[in-house]
Image 1 (cartoon, helix red, strand yellow):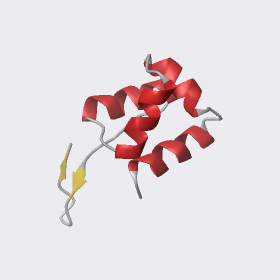
Image 2: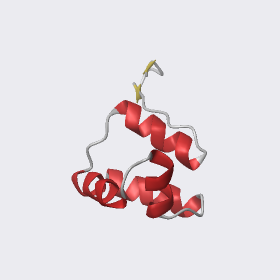
Image 3: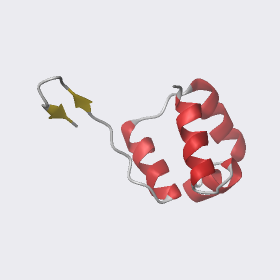
Length: 70
């Protein structure tokens, strides 16, 4: 799944548009679209997106033995 797909699914669940997200992030709609096209977001930006849509963003690696690095 791409970053665009994840964000678009989250927006649909939150009943928000990409324009709503751009506004909440303080980004132009053009900048958000460009970033969605490249799929490149920093961990901090993922956290900001989560906050903007009212969700927790959790980025972690979980190993087969249950160890998690986040």
